[in-house]
Image (tube, rainbow, N blue to C red; front, side):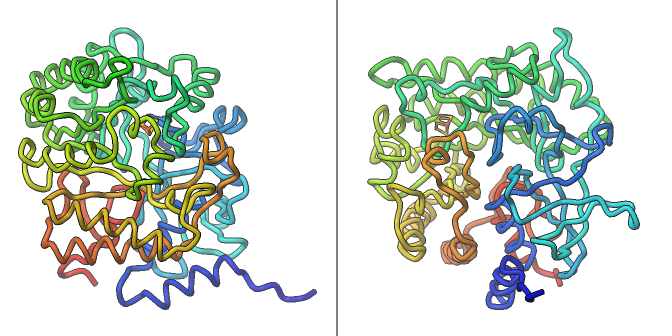
Length: 437
Ligand code: SF4
């Protein structure tokens, strides 16, 4: 039989060899897995691990009923193996066609990761936390109301799992919030669209009282709320402020509070801050003007790119330096049909945005795009962006972060290989920490 080289492994090795002086292998492999997703060849369903909570989006390439009725881990930790990796926490994105497959090795009695048949390393599933199995006084499960991710570090409070941008087809083109909700509702009847303050307070109480809680931060978020044809922002602020006030009133200082909402004017931002928001995330998604308008039509229509940028910078005067952290969806710059046709143009465009924000004491961060099939871009046939893009983006982000002398962002847990908990991109893994080998 003709020898067929493992092109996936060759590709990965190429980047590990070429960029090994600048980036740790943990960060490179993590990006490769995140962009392509993984598939599991066997899971015993009564095993004790923390299953995917589908906390806001599916993040899965394949998110049909067949996937939704099975239990997959929220995250995996990859370690040891052919690169002697330190523990690397990675969000699970299910992709039946991924070259990355997780199998159970009976001889070693553990799960292992293969890349197109080649052994990569050992796998551990996100540990189940006792509080996740408890219920609030109204009978809602903590997994639904206040699931934890990032190996338990972050409590994710998606209190409004709808987004009004979907109403006139103005949703972000990479977003599968609506189809995720429909699928989850079909398969898990207690999946909540809108959560009550009482349930949130109850669930946080259960987490707080639990001996196995390691949570240090919470994110309060949901889909966008618009006040009608002309966006004023009051409806969204009126909705979120009572949640913040109730949480901070009861648990002040217990967790770092992070709020992910639209870009608001100074007056509304002050209301969020006064209610207890510590970090403000108002996600920018993609820098290029034309791409922003095409990929984020709701953001473009209701607020507009220039105003969104202005409000991000203005927010520093309310929340303080480095506490405004807008997210980019890294990779959509290369999506069809609107995106750049080559990687360097995509990187240069995003780098312009990163530098603009970083030079204004804002710390932009990013999540790695793994196209969900039921999002608009997924339906257009988009698949994963090349690893080269993610390696170059990691290098560029860290180059600029260093150039502007910025701190490690608050509310993201530990930084560096073997320590990072942030699971949806490798920017926290790629930090070089003094004293680390
Ligand atoms: S603002 Fe965009 S990404 Fe966020 S929920 Fe709405 S459509 Fe999805």
